[in-house]
Each structure stands twice: as structure tokens, then as C-alpha cells.
Image (cartoon, rainbow, N blue to C red; front, top):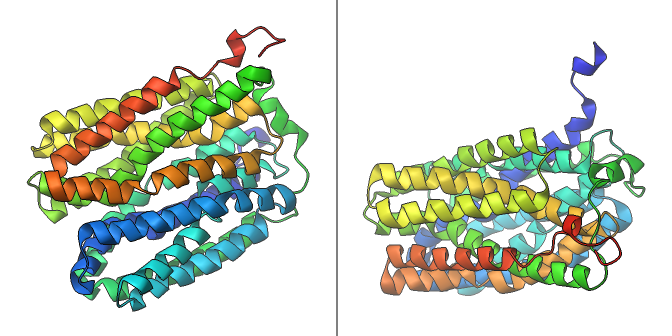
Length: 403
């Protein structure tokens, strides 16, 4: 009878899932709605404001390894509490900007703090807790919640903007983040988190780690593939609404189509959570990239129609939702638990260092060539992620002494 009840060891993952909804909503998705309007009021171009965002994302990449090392050393509680305090205040600070320099300072602070509260730190934090459930399952639960961030925050941000303007919208978003996320991070990450639970190692006991030259090769091609797929993600999160409007849809329709992505992220993650015990993370990642590519091909062919853009958003959302899980579980499967937080931090450092240019680059493509060509460029980037994925060695297929 006891086994059928709720397992309290899921509470950290559920709590962190809630904070990921609000974190990604306030620190990334809101930009897609508010930055174009801020550009008009501040006398800046679309490329300029997204260029500032690119610099903020680059700075976030620089501090990401620090966040990972701090979690490995001290656990996630105070790392995420402090990060959420700074992040919430930085979001509220965006309401006060009057020019390029103020926008740059506020976004730099927000995106730097974001690296202490978003997925990588959440994954590393929950992996260190002494729980009865494996780390892979906790990661799946966290991302299951995070998938609805765009569903909630694109329409919510648009509604707040239409009613209050962008200044008050940033205040509401930042204030809500502080009120909800700071206490959750404090409560669900109790304990020092300094000792890995032995049960975590059972999560991938049948999955041998890469070693030797195969380990180096695996890290190289995994990171390169992550860079390509992450470049696409950064562009979609910040330019989806603008590009869909450029295809001939209204702002409300673009936001609605973007909102479709979130539920289907959750559908994809729910599917992964059901089959995760039998699905190796390399297979998970392949499935994710395949669905994302299918979504973008649909968008390029049928995106000028309402059913087409909604279908494309749904298919892409499923793939992107599964990919987020693979981003946490694939390094765990290939390279093990030791130094996991720092490893995610360094991977994020490389990703963000390259991918920070995505909002600026694709905003420029949209501005010069139009939304369809911007989506076409994103499709080409996704093809690069698929091409480099196939070069990642599978340790299950390598001889034991060279794997």
C-alpha cells in the first residue's frame, strides 16, 4: 500500500520545475515580446536590442562554470537562493532603463544571475541530493514543468504589456519571481548536498562511461552538437513571435503559436519520462533532433497558414522538450556523476559563448531578408546538430578497454 502513495523525494524536482517555469519565462521568453517595443521607445533598432541580449547571454556563459563548481562544492541551496534574489531584482531593473547602456547593464545582470537558477544548476543541484529516485528521473520531472514556460509567459507578457506597458510588466515579472522562487529554492534544497547518494550511481549502472580517446572525442562532438541545437533554441525563444508575424500572422496569432510549443514540450517530456528506463540518452537525443527538424521543415512549407504554423510549433515543441532532458542526461550517461555540475557549467560556457550571438544574428537576418529566411537559417543550423550527433561514440558499442 505504501508504494502506491506519493514519494516525497519528488518534491525537490517539482519545486525546481516551478522555478524553471518562472525563470525561463522572466529571463528569456519575455524578451521576445518586450524587446521589440522597448527598441521603439528607446530609439534602438531590432538588431541593436537583440545584440545587447546576445552580450548578456555571452556573459551568462562566462559565469556558468562558476555556478556549476559552487554546486559541486556546496550543494544547490544557497547558490540558487542567491541567484534567484539577484535575478528577480535584475528583471525589475529592466523597467528603469532609458537607453542602450542601461539596457545592457540590466540584461547583463539578469542573464548572469540566470546561470545560477536555470536548468544546468537545477540538474546539478537535484543530482546531489540524497533521494530514493535516480537523477535521470528528477531531471525529467524538472523539465516536464519547465516545458510550459512559453505557454504561460508569451501570452501573459503580451497581456501585461497591452494593459500596463513594458515598464510595469518587468516589475510584475520580477516581483513575482522573487516572491515565489526564493522560498522554493530555500525549502526544497535543504541539507548541504555535499555527499552524492550511492543510489544515484545505479541510474546508469549498465551504461559504461567513455574513457581514453573515445571520451575526448565524445565530449568534443557532444558539445559541438549541443552548440548547434542550442543556437537554434536561443533564436526561437527570442525571435519566434517576430518571425511568425513576418510570415503574415498577427501578434496575437504569433504568441498563440508560440504558446503551443510549451504544452508539446510537456507531451514530449512526459513520453520520455514514461520510457526513460529503457531509452538510452543517445537515442533520446536523436529522437529530439529528428522531431525538431520535422517541425522546421513543416514551418518552412506550411508556416504561412494558421494550421501549418500551429502544427510546426507542436512538432518542434515535442522535440525541443525531449532535447532539454538529453542535455542533462547525456553528459551523465557518457561521463558519469563525478564533477557533473562543473561539467555542465563548462558545456554551458562553450554553448553560451557561441550561442550568445544567435539573437543578434537571426534578428539581422529577419531585418534584412525576412522571417521565412530567418527560419530557413535556423533549419540549416539544426542540420549541423544532426550531422555532428552521429560522430558521438556510443560506449555500449565500444570494447571495454577502449570505451
